[in-house]
Image (cartoon, rainbow, N blue to C red; front, side, top):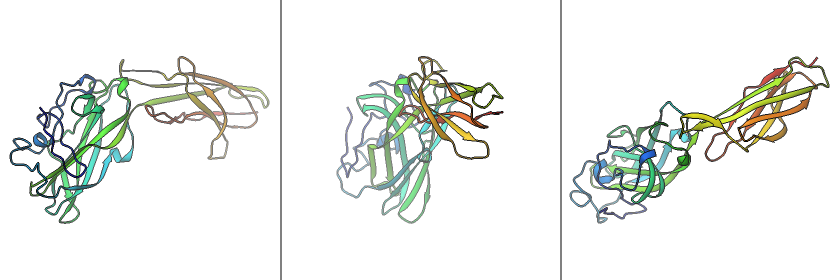
Length: 285
């Protein structure tokens, strides 16, 4: 059975588990145990030796930063390690903090993925007698932790432990962060060179990481902009918008008018980041 300690906007959840234990997110189920305050902060239980009745003030968290405020973008094979941080305050200072990411609707009974810190304890740097910023790292392995259905928004758990161990704050719904499938975009404009007034054919492909197969696959039926930058300019302008095919391929034609660079640009979605192809120069004669 899970026990809960209610305090200002905080909830304690999860079965008792070793802080370093993590079931790969792609394999997580309702029976998997996420860390809770008791296991994370090294106490025997949430009832013994730790406040559960509101006798003292809980720490206050003022800021949580995941990956420097950027989405976590993961490819097909290489693990990615990101830094997470918690800024919190308590009259006795802050001795430890915790952040994890979990995917689902309920942290106890309905989650299908979670990502926990590498460290057993956060590195906390005090900015005053009462306030510290505590840092941890989380490593995301696409082959062990992710499947395609997990792309998009994840819940962020944030917690902090008072410096004297008298109290803690724990909130499984502190915020959200996005974990995205890495995208790639190519372009080829031809012929090169081309006569003025002639036809330029611009091809390319929009692909993204497939975490189910550990390969890249076409991102289909997506709006992609064809853009042009005149030689000597630093600014791209959109010429037209086309849709990627059922295989993610791109193809369109334009009339050659002046020397410059052609590229495709994808604005991104909730599951896949924005990406621009490297411009391909065409000499117009």
